[in-house]
Length: 51
Image 1 (cartoon, rainbow, N blue to C red):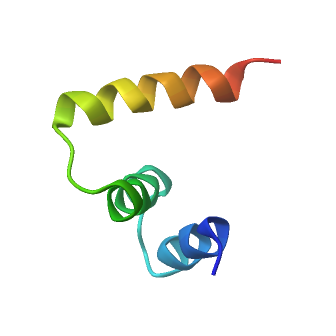
Image 2 (cartoon, helix red, strand yellow):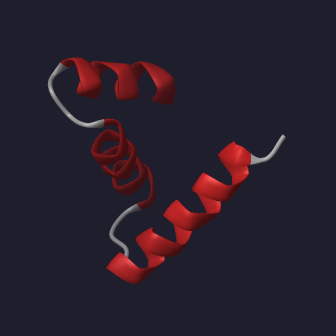
């Protein structure tokens, strides 16, 4: 199973994109503080918008 497959499956089950990404992140990396997730989210958002 790949991470992309898991994301697509969760979305097909009704998860929103961002919720599925957070769920997979937590499943792979264990528990984190909400502030850590927010920082990771900001970093991922910047990274995905770069050319």
